[in-house]
Each structure stands twice: as C-alpha cells, then as structure tokens.
Image 1 (tube, one colour):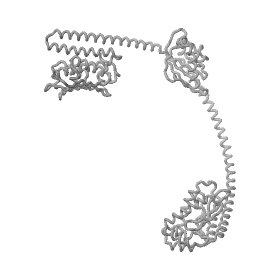
Image 2 (spheres, rainbow, N blue to C red):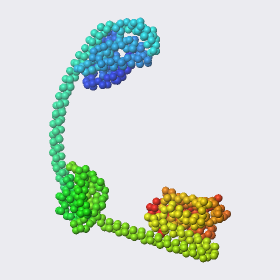
Image 3 (tube, helix red, strand yellow):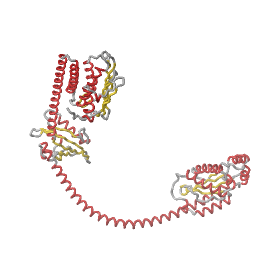
Length: 606
C-alpha cells in the first residue's frame, strides 16, 4: 500500500511545517489566490512526466496539493516505524533549511534520495514551499548501496529488497530536473499573481460597497444620535436643576448641623486662612465669627493660647505646625484626640479636647478641627483624684493604726503569758500573740506598699516564715525552711486568710513535728495558674499525724481555724495526708475570692 504510507508521511511533514513556519507572515493565503484543482493537475502531470513525487505545503502546515506519484523506494522505507521516524527527521531538516531559501535547491534525505525544495514567493512574501523528490540524479554507487543495506538493518527492512528498489529508482539528471521544476515553479507563481490581482480587485469592489453601506449607516446612526442627544440634553438640564436644588438643601442641612453643634467646628483653606468658625467655637473661645474669619489660623491659635505670655516662641511653633499640615497633610497631632488649654478674652481658661484632620483638595490640603469643652470633666477628674489621694492617706493611716493596735495587743498577751504559771494558758496566749503578729505583718505590708488593696505573696510568705522560725527559736541548720511562692499579688482579703493558714500550719509543724532538738525540713509552696487556680501546700518530714487523724474531728483551735479559712472563707478544698510526715494541700479559685490572678478586680472585702 504505497499510497497509504505517502499520505501518512504527508501528515508528519505537516507537523514539522507547523513547527518551523510558525513565525511566517499571516497575510493572504495561496489557497485564496489560486485554484487548487488547476495546481494539482499541473503538479500530477509534472511528477508523472519527470518521474518524481511532489507536494506543496502552505505556511500553516496544511498541504495545498495531494502527494503526486510516490515511489516504491520511499514507500518501502516508510513501511516500518523506524523508517518513518528517520524519514520524518530528514523532512524536519529540509524544512528548517527551506526557511533560508530564495531559489530552488536539491537536498538529500538520509537514504540518499534527492528532493527538490523551492519556496513560492508572491510579491516578496513566502506563500508556500514545494517539495519534489524520490529520484536520483545518477545511479547509486556501490558504497551507497552498502550503506543502504546497513540502513535497512537499522530500520527493520530486508536489505536486498531495499537495494532492489533503489536500483529500480528512476535516474533523472540534475539539469533536467531543475529545468522542469523551474518551469513548474514559474507557472505556479504566475497563477498566484493573477489570483492576487483578482483577489485585490474583489477586495476593492467589496471595500467600495462596504464604504457605501457604512456611509448610509453612519448617516442614519448620526441622525438617531442627534435626536437622542437632544433628548438627553433636555433630561440632563432637568437632572442638573434637580441636583442643584438637592445640593442647596444639603448645604442648608449641613450648615444647620454645623451651627447647632455644641462642639466647636473650624475649617481652614489651603492658604491657612480661617473660612469656618461655628457658634460652638464662639461659645468655647469667646471669639466671634466676624473676629476670626479671613485671618491666618496661626494668629488666632496664638491669641487663645493659655501660655502665650510665658512662651514667646509659641507663635513660631504654631505657625510651623500649621505650615507643615498645609504643605504635606501630615503632623504628629493629626487624627487623634489632643487636650489643649485656651484662654478666653475674659481671662477664663477652658480645657478642650481637639481632633484635627486634613482634607485633600486639588490645590493641596484644607484642615478641619472639632473642639469639645471638657473643662467640667477635667474638674470632676481632679476632684476624683483628690478624693482618691485622701482615701489612700486614710487607708494608710488605718492600716498603720491597726498594726500598732495589734502590736499593743500582742505585747499585752506576751506580758500576760509571763505573769501566769499555767503552761496551757501560756500556750494559748503565745498562739494568740503569733496570730496578732501575722495580722500586724499583713497591715505593715499593706500600708508600706504602693497598692493598699493587694499583697505581694512572695514577700509576705517569706517574711512570715522567717518571723515564725525566729519566734520558735529554730535554727535553719536543724530544720530546713523551703519556701516556693508565686511572685504575684493577691487581694488583701485573700492574703489575710492565706497568711493565717500558713501561720497555723507552720506553728503546728514547729511545735510537734520534730520533737525537741529534732532535725528535718518544712516546705511551703504557693502557686497560681494562668486561669487563677491557686494551690497551697505546707508539708514536713517529721513524726507525722496521729493514727486515724481526721481534721473534721480535730479539737484544736488552730486546725479548726485552718479548715474554716480554707473551705468556708476561700471556698476551696482541703486535703490532709500523713506519709513520712504531714502534708496539708489546699486548692481554691482566686476569681471567686474578690480578684483575678493579676489583680484586675480590686473590689476586696475589708
């Protein structure tokens, strides 16, 4: 089926053409200029006469003609996959070289078959390329036949069959081929040029008709446009009048808002001249609109500045600030609230809250400002500050006196203990004295700190444990004191309860856990999580609690006090264990006891 292989080769050459001719000028196609059937007939007759195959390809890769007179030699080569690949490669190379041709030229494929390649140029433009081949200008040499046998093996063919077809290939002298192909090329060129002239004439006629139709259409469209424009003008005039009325009403509404505003409103043009000064600004500054409109803003600001006589350079600073905002629309005090003090002509000073903002225009920047008189608010604020200072002084005095009174009571208890002979009474009086000392320590820290409503627990617990060890005359070398406390502040009410609990548990451990002259350690841990959960643990490694001990059944005042403070006052839980000593664990929520971990809620119960 030779014809089948030729058609397949035609398709593959088209793919190559698409690759190498993609940059050619996309103008009038040769197919539009010539009759395909006439060119095909000339090509078929020529190919049959000369004994070669021929085809013409367009720049887009399409074939203008069908493949004429394919030879058995090339058909045999293209009967295998490898043969088609090698043939395709040869056509690729010839196609690339054809881009540089301006005259016909003979090229050879990989199987030594000759191919004629000629560009078809019309009016200086390449319209197509003609291929004619599968012939020999002379017989194959013995060396070429041997090479063909090797090629046959490479492309999966019988070497003898390929050599037989090669020897049967028609031999056409170069001179004959070139003369015939030039003649065909000239014929196709004449047909293409005649077609171009006919096509140009047709285009000219079509263009004249189109121009006539277009002119008629334009006249009709223009008439319709004029009618529509007249109607639109009438409607636009009516709309503009309505817009002007709406703008006038809007301006009146805005003017009323500005004039009725309690706040002062000021507007300055691009030159720094005051062009708006409403009634609110008149009431605040004591300057009328007539006194300030048309004046530079810097002059008026200096006039009402409260410290104008104390700072001669103030006027220059004000003018420099106004100039900067007019030139750049920027200043450090823009778009934020600022407090300013102004002095009215009657000598009364007012405190204003002022917001200044730039307004971009085609000429630069205008400046607007809104002022609010907050004099009464500032006076009330100062009164509150004075009240807080007085309250702070009273609280400090109260804590100081409470501490002194507690120390007096502690001293009385100490004196009473020295005058009694009852060991039980002395013990009770000593416990009460230490409780008084704990309360006094809390009040001392409160009035000496900067915050009267909170206790620094790390400092407080450390001092408390030192005082208790000192009061029991316990050396740190015998009984180790380990204190680990979160460096946080607790509300005073919570701190008092925690301090009393630690006092009772440390006192109990120091009296009973180690015996006289015993050694060991006592640990105090107070931690608080981020969500306000507090854990308090007091433990020792002493003799431990009596067998069957139950704090709910305890008869001692100290442990009953610990239970009441932990569960009732702090609304927490209390757990007691005795395994190689005694351990008291408490957990409570700081937020449920008048404050958060960071002291955000200071509503404490005194």
